[in-house]
Structure formats: structure tokens, C-alpha cells
Image (cartoon, rainbow, N blue to C red; front, side, top):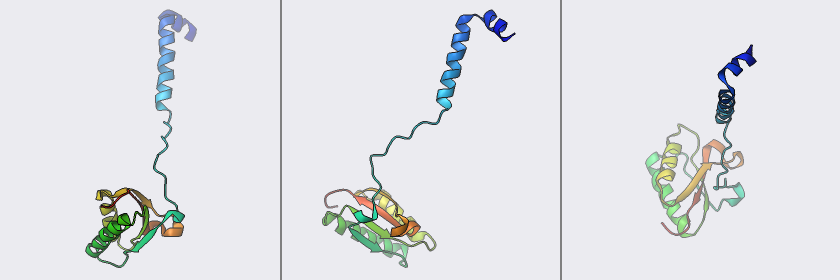
Length: 129
């Protein structure tokens, strides 16, 4: 019965229908993620550390900005920022500063050995700020 139906529609339709199904399956297949050119820093890469936990958000922000300025002047590329877990306010301020700072190339949550959720590793661009 199926063959009769396909014959009635014609070979051209059959081929078009099969191509449509093939294209649909390929579109639905999960796409491979492109490899990021940015490498995740390792604890051994860390050249400087600042501990901000327990500070107010304003003091943490000012301390972080000064720390980043000095680190860039010293041509340090990988820094660890300890913000603690707490209420999350200091962490949010740290992430905001890192997103907006022109001297920061990229950043990520620190590995568990370096503080995990309570710390962030940032990679700085070369040259002074």
C-alpha cells in the first residue's frame, strides 16, 4: 500500500521527501560546540591573590580596582580573587567589576582547590591600565 502511494506521487516527490527528512534530522542533531580559544587558568598559573571576603561591597570594589591596577603594572596575567560565599553581594560586585574592567581578558570560577564558589580567577590583558 505504501509503495502504491509513493508510485502515485511519483519518484521526484519520493526523492524530495527523503531529502527533507534527512535535512530535518541533521538540523535536529545537537551541534558540536566550538572549542574556545580561551583556556581555563590553573591554580599553578596564579601570580597574585587578594582576599575580599568580609569587606563591604564598596571597600571590596575599591580594593579590587587597586589590586587589578597594580597587577597589570607588574605584568601579572593571572590573579585569584577571594570573595567568599556569604550573602553573595561581594561576589556579585567582583563579577560586575571584572565584566566592566577594560584590563580583564576573561575570568571563571576558581577550581575547588583554590576556593571554588568563594573565589574567581581572572586573566588580565597585557600592559598597564
